[in-house]
Amino acid sequence: MRFNLLKQVTSFLTVNPPRASLAVLTALLCLSSIQALAITGGASVEPNTSVALRTVGIFNIKTANACSGTLITKDVVLTAGHCVISKKENLIVIFDTHFPNKVGETDKIDPRNIRTIKAMAFHDDFKNLDEAGSDYGDIGIIKLNSPAPENYLITPLLKDVTKIRPSDTLTLAGFGYSSEKSLVTDRNYPGLDAAITEGRAYCNNYKTKCYVTEVAGDGELRQVQVTIESLRDKDMILNESNQKATCSGDSGGPAFLEINGQTVLAGVTSRTLTDGDCGSAQGVKTLVPHYFTWIKQMIQSM
Image (tube, rainbow, N blue to C red; front, side, top):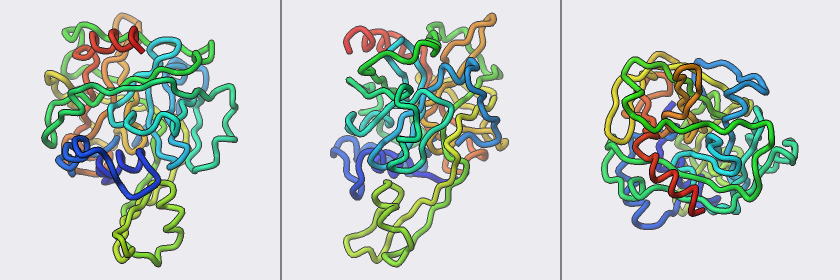
């Protein structure tokens, strides 16, 4: 699966052909080989389990684009930076193990499991990124308008980076798609207007060339376990090349680590290190300990 981060971000932003601020767009254009990270090779997450009660979905009601996140206080969700550059009015946070995958399907979700957003922000390291594969902070935070359902679990943040090592096993989770195919076509493509509305397609002015992403998925929360290959200053590289990986829609989702029987949040799904299909490339997770102070400051100020 190839899914360019620029297309993911701009489609998450708007129902129109891609637009972004000059600063963000210039930075994102440098990431043509980076993917916006459905769990590949994973298993369904049963309701009321630890992973289910810590992981949330972030849904764009205008485009149907998806991200994932982790509940870190009763009303704060941690996710990827590129998941929070849309208008907050277009996003909802879903507390469930199933997720809508089309515009207009949110009525299938119990309204008691939906939260709107009060505020959101991403770190300056993401705003100032400058090159593909660089070690930067794709991390964002969401303040909810009302607390999460009472049965949901708050996940502690990993503060001490020395507690995590290469070869450690992490549990990844997300609401991503199960398959995706990119096509180059034109105005005659069936369902083109619907694809544009849902943020899965964009065209030149005359629609003589259009880029369409066909996606499939049941909107189900899935999890998979992978190992760490290496640690960098701001992120970590995971071995996601053995058909066990995150994929489109899993961006912002958790990388959980077990320490002495306690589940902590060690990373946030960002992208792949190199261009490649999901399950055949190294995955990059933003390192939570590096941003621990910023996260705590944001929680207090939002």
